[in-house]
Figure 1 (cartoon, rainbow, N blue to C red):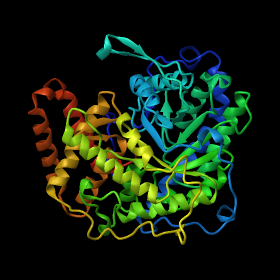
Figure 2: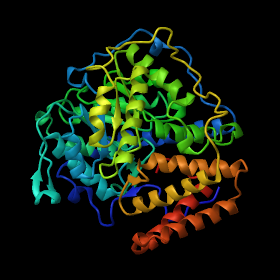
Figure 3: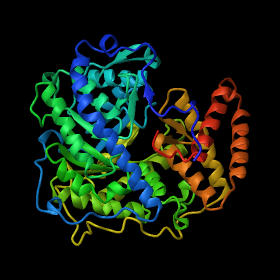
Figure 4: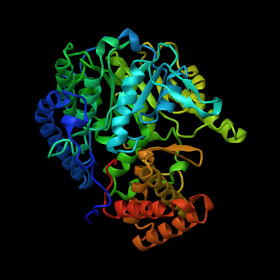
Length: 506
């Protein structure tokens, strides 16, 4: 495998000269150092275990279900009253204060502000996102509306539930101490340290991303409890939801939930990251070369199997099941696109509701009304389908699904260049051709290009030529002229990540 150059940093780093004692709130160093010493070594060990599971899968020992255990028994959680209605969770990057305010004012029952995939993994963005999360939790975040005479817009009083997605267990944060610290731990600890829990209208709610094994729940359990106790709170003061985004994790969600049952109130199908993971863990299998992304129906069997499993597991144990994001965004300035986007949204969310999900994710305030209308109020009341299979085949055949075309490969290459351009410009999510694309999309496309090269659909030389041609097309647009250098770097990084086998979500 090629080594990545220094131009693709493996982790976020604090700037040169940064001091945790002087550049973060007074006392945070003393609060954080014991947490770092206790949990970062465990985080790094778990990250190494993931590599072994991936290597085994690529050698033919694919992920599967765990042996029966107490996790599969008759246990339940008590769903808190403050979060019984999560029919729609509006989501977006935490560093965009204006968007956070708009999401909180959208009428959505829940809002998840994101420190991870929809935000550039850069230290200043992380700190700004955490500050916005604190201000949002207090109802104090505002923005200046330039379209309305510089009016200051604040958060309206509402029963909306606020969640914050911290960075995943696979990520480390450099520059805080001489050796890297866990990015998940850093985000959670700094957020909790800055918050006055007495001012919160409901318990602190965290979204856990990128889990890959049931064992990781013990790390999160111990971290959530240690942070709460360090803040002088009861050990179960912090609640969480967890995303199902990794193929091996899909087999272990019941065991994960059992291990984290003092804190966990639901699971969410992060379907775009899940698609990327499905490719990754089956990368060397010629039967799993996926077709062009936009020819894959949203009710493709590998999604529907998981849509059957998640609500069955969740409702059996008293938890919420939340569906995924619809990437096609409405556009009030384009009537045709707007109608297509909202029609697709209604169909997608109706499918999830029929599968007994309690709610879903959206990313645009105009999507809220349609989304919540597809789900019963306030939730599915833990309904279970007669004869539902809690252990379905999670790798059903993809024969006959979609199309594999040169145009699809070109579209993938064009998207990864444009996404990486946005990322290098400080944006973790970009609206491209009507779709809101974040790191999950970038990863799907990079993996699709890699598997098409691996299995002979294209040669490496052809991929290089396609990258050159798509970059040239982008630079023909006068609007991109001033950003030409960034586009060239985005093109270089994207192809290098593919060629080097660098498929992790970063």
